[in-house]
Length: 140
Image (tube, rainbow, N blue to C red; front, side, top):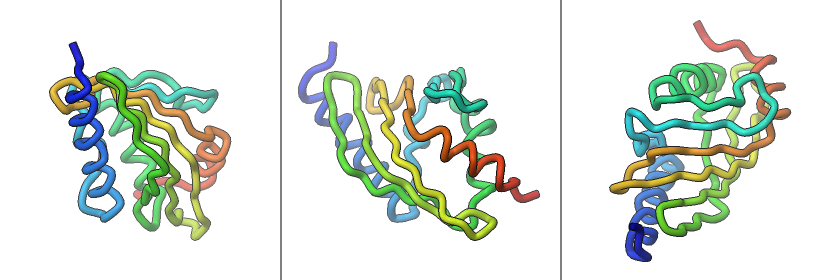
């Protein structure tokens, strides 16, 4: 059973991960267990549940990063914790390989166990995402 202490510790772990991501020295995906599932909510062709960390990274994150000229940088608006769930509300931006800006607002829900993510659900503007995904080809 989760305690208030667990929620506070989970929030601190996630905040530290986002701080490293913002500084260009880490990524929140380092918190995912190997068997963690990741669900993208919405109507994008990429909206579905990825059963493992590796499936999510291979199908979404690596092709996403390959379309970028600069790293995606988050600007956290808030991090909230309740029991074993941590919610991250943030904006993120980067420059794409075609020189245009990419900006989106995200809310991620991390279910945590032992300070690691077991399951994630992501909400964002899938229309903005799809336009960028279809416009910019990943680097070869």
